[in-house]
Length: 419
Image (cartoon, rainbow, N blue to C red; front, top):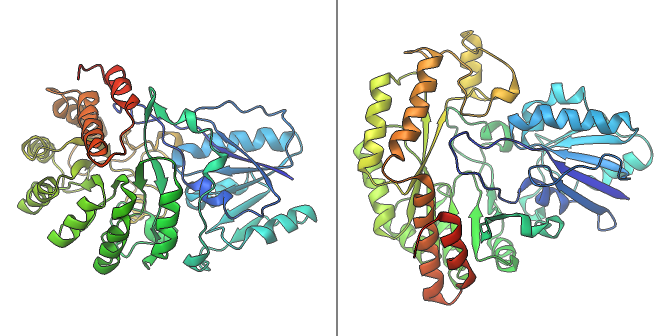
């Protein structure tokens, strides 16, 4: 059978330099399919959908809320042609009830060990409206190597520059951060993959640059150190969400090729200042993820925070506004307080204000988001800061013999800088 997996298009942040990374969910899902299934993948961000091209079954993989309405449109178009559609992915779990109105079937949870049964139902014309495995997670050992062969790899470059491939070493998160829906999606139990399987998958990826997409690597110190130790011989260069800023962990991370980390910055505390410095002391860059519009934020607080970001020498910063995604504590609170202004999911981009802030108007928060981007990148544009991170990784690749000479020329063209 021919199973077409579609990843609906979605818009980047308004102020963000646009590039596209290979999606992770679809390639991990594809690894759960039986070997005799012919997989055809379309990333609508970069490819067109031919709705008249014959296919037996369509799977729509949605990661973000802002993909939901487009995903529903795609499903409606296929179902009008008599083709059955099944939905899965993070955004499907967040919007399950609405998605059911546009689907023959909705899959909730993790797919490993489940798809043989689902496809058997399809072949018997008994596809169930809902397959709900959210509270019945498969053993983490069942997670296989992602099917990156379904990707058209040449599409995932930034103006010819090789970007990163995505990989994960664990699932679940023991933290329960206020704006985050991970506790609902993956549970609060940290579930690391067997390190030997993770290392084997990383080694098999034909790309020296990786993004380890785990919710947080800072969940188990011994596991974290063991993982980094095993990564050292790979000579990969990687970015991730936060790692622990303990000296032993940072030293191993640096040896393992840590390139930069995403670090949330909520306040102007010395704790944050010192954490950023420790990352830098070990040669690890930092992209700050800055969330504006928390209930404690006043206009002065936000402006003071932007000044602080410039002081601590972040390599990059990404600014978003608080967004009440379903199944988060912030959604619960703002919904109960009747402070959500719209439930139009196309506006849930994280750069549009969709709620009533506590200390200012929605329009003022929107202005402050624009102020944050412009102020932080006033002296050095985002493209130049991105180039510096690329230059950093190229120097490391030169040092350990993994550098590809073509990258430097292409980087010069892409970022407009003589080097």
